[in-house]
Length: 597
Image 1 (cartoon, rainbow, N blue to C red):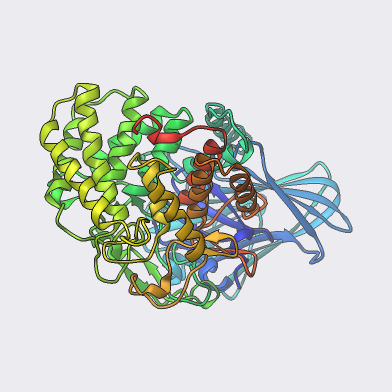
Image 2: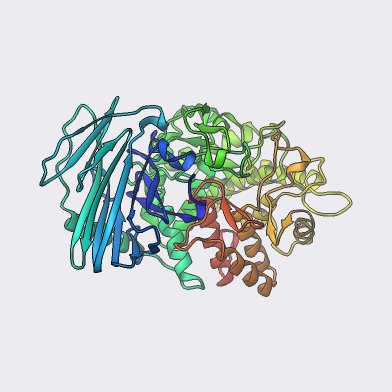
């Protein structure tokens, strides 16, 4: 059985990531990218689905862990009756290698360690051919299946059916390095890594990046860790920003709301981009804008809501039977069927983020503004089309108020680019369309009796996404309609003090089952409270949200308050970037809409 979601740490080389449990088992690792098939899939099943455990033989050993400051080098300290030892784990940021390093360091006395390796390639569908390839002095085990292979060095591993086990003792002052290296099976294995050099380089890279963070408000440690998470989820080669490191971790335990988040949503990536820009990272913005230009190349009408890490378009959703699911939550899905949805808000999010880059003095390239013009025209061409909304409903498309506002924002940014930044475009026509959208939203997106914004036209329901309206400058946070909307949310969407996305029982999403409070939405509520003078409530809600982070500062998608546990895919970019925005709001920063009202 996998560990609780909040018990997992992330290791990252900015191409892929490993999830390591508190008990020392790597239960999730896809190589060489986040969206590659898994080598270790026990997170979505059991140890037989692939894992690599490393811990003291003493079952009573107590672990304590932390990241080395501003890095993803994980240190787990094990205290046993016979001694104390640490495991230092990381993924080197090497330009041509993909591997995991697990260094064991003796602190005092002696500690007996046991390691167990279960290789199960391709989402647990391929058992590899395995053979010993090292020497008694330098043991190594090679496993290969189809196009992929790994080599594990540092300990003699003995086969027990499909499990390979090793044991050793570490004494005070000693070190032992275990490594797992991935490589194409038709090539020779990479040579052993210089571990000392790799540790120093990895530490220097992460801390050097973090040293550029600009933040002058409260909760600095949490903001820095969240920005590091966003960087860890950003591919250092392509610039693509994945929504999370995992697939199919359930929104409802035992349920079927299980989705693959290892892709680049234009919306989530744009929001991540804004968070990075607001804290001093223009180079990342430039890198992502180049990714965007490559990914959306072609007809504007063919723009998708999400892409693969390098801009791939084919993300066909399918169900796996080889992995039984986290605590039995099935089906396990790879790919994501939402790729074929029309979500009217997405282009607006992209254009708002690109305006933020423009305001921050990122110069427009030869193609970036023509691309934005084309995206604006695509919004206008789709203006009479209902959509599936920000939450990717699988029911009937609706006229979602949030989506219509983001379409308004898309055209508004075009007008502003021409009027205020001197770029070329049909601002008069765009202004007419923008004003038409506002009139429509004000008439059809507001409940005529209650005077609050509604989830979609013709509905009396509210939706947490409406908290975005003042964030993008559609209305002021203290607009009477917005204040009434918040009152409705507090009545209808608060569960145990935290905010749901929407009421699943309304039937709008076309799915069975329920879900837990959505972490990002509650951070949006912090921002709204802070902007309307409800400072004590904002600080209280922020404190309760920060208590949801695990011991390493990581957040998943949702939170099961009744059972005090994280739910959904992890670590979740949207949760972390919303934490950053909320912290900025508590510091008095009004964010991306401050100069637009």
